[in-house]
Image 1 (tube, protein in one colour):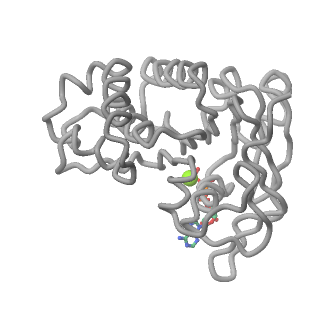
Image 2: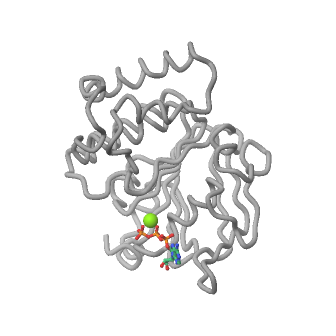
Length: 237
Ligand SMILES: Nc1ncnc2c1ncn2[C@@H]1O[C@H](COP(=O)(O)OP(=O)(O)OP(=O)(O)O)[C@@H](O)[C@H]1O
Ligand SMILES: [Mg+2]
């Protein structure tokens, strides 16, 4: 079996007196697609904020590649983990090209950056066509593709996505799932946060189901898909 890339143990986090994560343990192996599902307020984004060092946990440990997670978000990116954030967070008044450059702003390997730019343009021809257009003028689906492409420009070992399908038409969601599958086949490990349980479970190797700060079930995508009652109870899916 491949090595454990991300290991989260007994993680808790709070906002003031409100506990958003309570004793979360999970792991992601090199090469996997792991999904984390949960309804609104389950703590999914808080988990990703802790994993990108945007938020300091109250307790627990996070190991990436066997080492403690760096304390500064940019060092986390340098270590090989990127987040494709909730709501995409595109810079509306910057061009598509400049948005992509932000993704690689910590890198100095110019040849590698050029290669990766070619790779994302090959993967997302629409972005190449719109290279000089403002990010804010892209459609929702195109903005999501741009957010993924920007993440790729950091050449991550682990890409973490926060609800990439939110607000998008089913056909676009399918395209995004296909992109994630392809990225994974090309070697990127993926942690996918979703409320779109069905599609995420069909794509992933393993999944965790969260409910108000806790993990209530884990298993293969197939195992969770087969558990209708649980999915109904926690996701209404
Ligand atoms: N900045 C904040 N200040 C105070 N409370 C917060 C903050 N961010 C999140 N919370 C609370 O923490 C809990 C978990 O929120 P979080 O955003 O992690 O959930 P989520 O699973 O990502 O939900 P959604 O599916 O709606 O994005 C919620 O109860 C939320 O109200
Ligand atoms: Mg969220």
